[in-house]
Length: 315
Ligand code: PMV
Image (cartoon, rainbow, N blue to C red; front, side):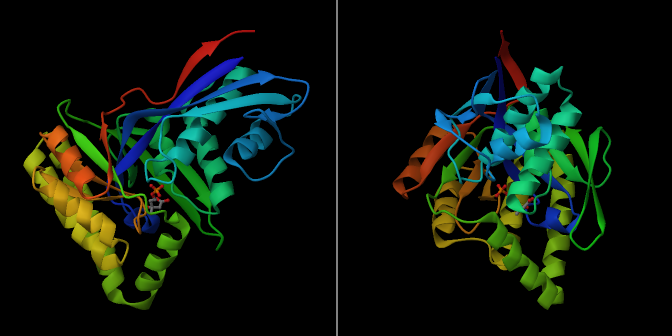
């Protein structure tokens, strides 16, 4: 049996703009999904017989395994559909366990195969979530950076080749983030479509995307110097651009306003339209209370610096 686990993530800057080739910065968090795989006489996922389908686990198995039936168990302490990257963490942990059963994995091949798995199931994706979950720490996806970990290429539906550089970023140790889950479910695909209509329909949309790019690039510098005040300002600016793109939500606004009273800054994280927000703060307990009072589910997230790992191997 092989067990692998992979962390979730939140996006600090650049969601949506990354779809247009701009940089996004994401940070891995200390909530994980664990996947255990053993050989079996019939294919099972979480105690149920399965015969295919489009789940992340099935898609990874189809891609990487042709050596007989497997019994797969998953265990998660990441809230699903919350913008914390649970589908990416599931894809990364499954791919890592499968590659480890074959021989052993490299992070680069985990990142690539987990991205292709997520892409197949969702129909579109940037490699932000899967690469952050694989590497841990803070990751920039987009233009070529200083510490490139790997590049990921994928032909788009229009035949154009997309290429993303994935770089690791320096990250100070004293950053405290609180995530607030709205409980409002939203679909990443429909949010991406909404932004596309806006960008295709007016020059203003692309201008906002360019403003978000500038914020993300400045965010890289602010992270390097551990400048929390500037990071918070940039988070607030990023939020107002996401609002203008039409991907915020009244419940997100409520939680963001509440969190800002004791934070450097706060913004939605991920696709928006619901999902979650994130705040940078020195007073996590107070911010958690404020989020809870406004009807959100607060999670004090710590940074995961390890990324994907093999938990154990036997048999
Ligand atoms: O829904 P999430 O947390 O995986 O974030 C989506 C981020 C987008 O930029 C909107 C889409 C993408 O694939 O990067």
